[in-house]
Image (cartoon, rainbow, N blue to C red; front, top):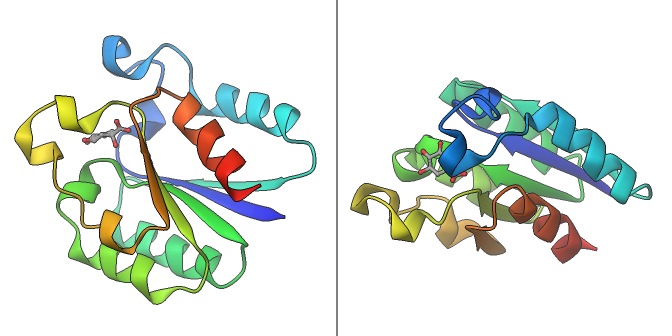
Length: 137
Ligand code: DQA
């Protein structure tokens, strides 16, 4: 099974950014852990800080992967375009968030992705991604 993990803005700073919220591990290091834990999965990875690049990535993966694990980060709360892209593609999308967005500021409580996602995993740290891969399996 081929799955694509897509990370949005500022997630390239994982490990350095607000570690009390997002932890100490870089996503690249965590990706190695995931690939070791799930040797039978082909896991592609894409990160961008640019909304249109994320939409392009969702479109690409959405017609070529068996599923997408999407953390659109701040664009989750602002981007109709990303929500529309999730709706447009045939591959199921699992929305993930590292932090519990519902225990944070109210502007993080709304998601343009959730209505079109297969499911949502929120608040388990980097483990949210692992749970999403398990959901696909
Ligand atoms: C996040 C939560 C978002 O509100 C925030 O803008 C992020 C990361 C998370 O994974 O917890 O950048 O998506």
